[in-house]
Length: 221
Image 1 (cartoon, rainbow, N blue to C red):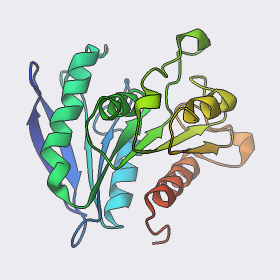
Image 2 (image 1 turned 60 degrees about the horizontal axis):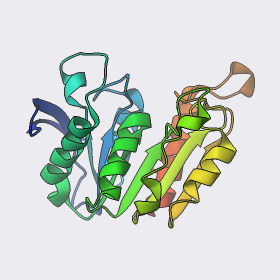
Image 3 (image 1 turned 120 degrees about the vertical axis):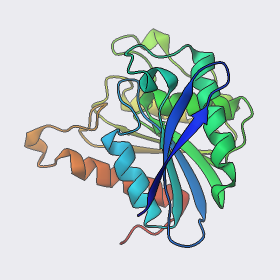
Image 4 (image 1 turned 90 degrees about the horizontal axis):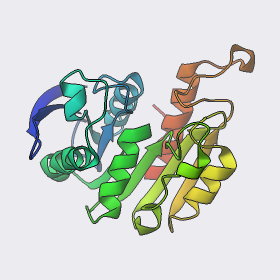
């Protein structure tokens, strides 16, 4: 599928890279994806999801934040992360059909925060939602979840140190229209033990199927 790189200005910060993977024909959805804190626009899972969605008629966009553009390790302040999300949504909202925002870990969490704060979206997809830092359940990141009005998918592994299955069930219950999909044995990076008989690509494929069902898109092909 054809891909095009864009430069998007973030108010109060620098410009960032976004890569759009265009579908053939008219798009039924526009899907925007942001990576986790330690990755970037070339995050393997993001690349996989966006390219697979494009084959199913989705205008798929992935981007990264200003600190990732600069090659820095520490995330930007929350207002900058949120401004980046809003700038990308504003750029691609008219890309076709309904709009879904989301991403992995921090990228998805910040996307859900801007939607909870009033940014319009038809769906939110949260992969490996970082419910709390590992070993610190008292620092739960759930304050904005009850304000999410869009349909929301939580898709995480059962071995994720950032949120145990029961914790995620409780968090998802805070969102009125939520779907929870748990991937057996997968950790925060979607890796699985060799003894499971599965590999990371198998987990990627399971997460894709969960997303396609959530968006009501064909799972075959």
